[in-house]
Length: 488
Image (cartoon, rainbow, N blue to C red; front, top):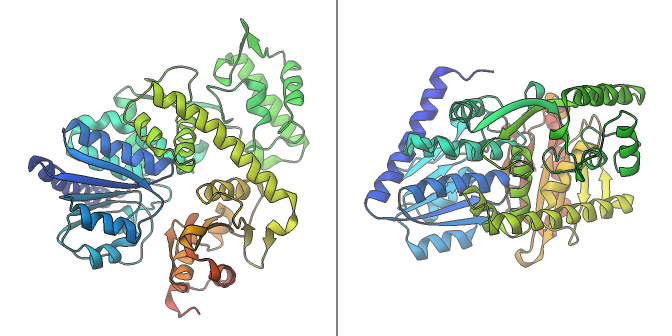
């Protein structure tokens, strides 16, 4: 769906205000602090702003963190930077910032739903929701950062591939054939025009550039292939029956190596197989849009933008976000090599946690209106979002949201991650509002998108919080406006 011209122009004008403040600070030789979220989108956003500042020869520091808290505020107060930039978060902390650092110059480049805006001449708040542009599907945090960077200097169009990586990492490819739409489509057009990107229609299996074909099929959860997913031997046999060689000149072939006739045979055979299993819906997930970053080397995880996003996400979730930042800003040597190892460790951690959840039924409970994963102190709180995303995808035709939590003992807090599906959205679910309202009842903080959100609450309030989320989800499903009533 095309963006209304007036909304687009208003959004662009706001990014230009942010760019103006950034340029004025640099011209005065001011020091800039950049804070960003630790997921793929947040790291991409920080990388875009960092690269733009680097080109200006600015004095700046990048910091990746999970949320804005009193420690971040204290750091700002102590360091007295001439400008603070928040990317991929910040909108929900406007009131806190205005209370604690009202005289600081602040730029917020975010795309999450927020409750209240703040009028402060020192602040430039850029968020698509201000103009009723959906931040969950039409533009990511890195996309907002990209528009600001392009307003700083049009030559920053060379950062468009990183914004595409961030959008895909935020799973904004919700349009037909898994394409990016809304404001994201403008970024795609920029990248295409600059000869930095090509978009291909292909089989949608992760590892198109890097995994042997049989492993790509065996590791697939979307689409789920009964009898093949999780079974490398069965996958290899399936391919051999189609006369598709697994190797060429002693090198494992990946999906990108398939010849047109092989690709056609494989696609037809997979569609027939899924139909024979009664999985009609999964057939639609076979083919989609692949975003190829043509300046990146073949057969590397940076060539396919979705693989690039997973690599970045792994560095943030495994406490090595500096590696992801370095890659976004151009390092293709030591940082990339180390990040590839981090990615392997990340995958092992995810499999370990998923097996742990599935071992005992009580670790995943069904309530009337939600599912809950009890991660307690076992699941790493930085990976809980990934776990909830995978599980909500694996539960077919899910009509209820899924929330998962992990304890952050040193903070005496529980980190909640909430995910849902398009089916639940159509029924009225808005997780961002649920998590925001429920967390505030227990002196916590929460928010996000309608389809994906998060919160943090005191550990001793976990059960009460879950019960309230269940209640609020039920009210939304019955058509009630949860913001218009005093939910207790």
